[in-house]
Amino acid sequence: MTPVRRFPPLALWLIAGAMFATIEALGLIVSGNPSLTNAETNAVVAVNGFHAPALDAIAQFIDVVFGPRFAVLVAVLAVVIAGMVGRSWWTALRMALLIAIPWAAADVIKVIIQRPRLDMSLLAHPILVEPTSFSYPSGHTAFATALGMSTVVMLAGWRYRAAAIVVAAVVALTTAWSRMYLGAHYPSDVLGSLLLVSVWCLCLGALMRNSRLLHPQRREEVAALTRVVDSGMTKGDS
Image 1 (cartoon, rainbow, N blue to C red):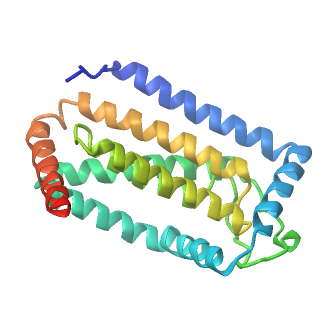
Image 2: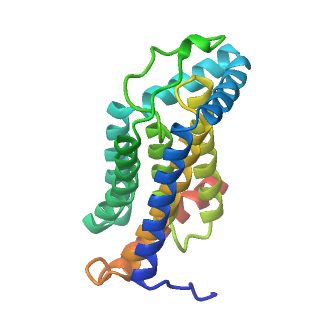
């Protein structure tokens, strides 16, 4: 097996901080530039124009499941499953932190930037009641990305990890599309969440691997996790 390159903790903190500052700067630029906002509005109107009942159902399902109320339940379920499969509350704790911290970082930027929502009266097919929270970055996309990336990080060393990466990417990108389709977010809103949360999850996962506090039982937990998942895949293939 090829050795995994380990970044020093300081480098990881700097990368995470630089990404936070970059996404914050992007938010200040797009929210303060009427020309960019108009261009993004036109893009959202175009996406919303590709209207179909099936697409409505998908977008509305994501809106509910990854919304503030249900997202907490989904996160708790993911944490419980991780703890049960890994047979350790440390595994559950790591899963919880990998979801919660990047998701919270996106919310912090949302409060800082305070970008107004798109005017839904401009949409050809308005579906949602206009949200009252701020627009940048997208909370739904942040949660979907955190859920997928935390799973990918937790499955490090699993032989089917590539499949997990594909599923995580599909979920995150579909959520990003749905937020524009519903007219709830601008393109830069979802892009900011995708970039911020992905980088923060990777950095946080690397910091946890280097942490003495979280290290003692890690090998045994990862081994147990991969054995259980591999066993399920083997049964599915038979």
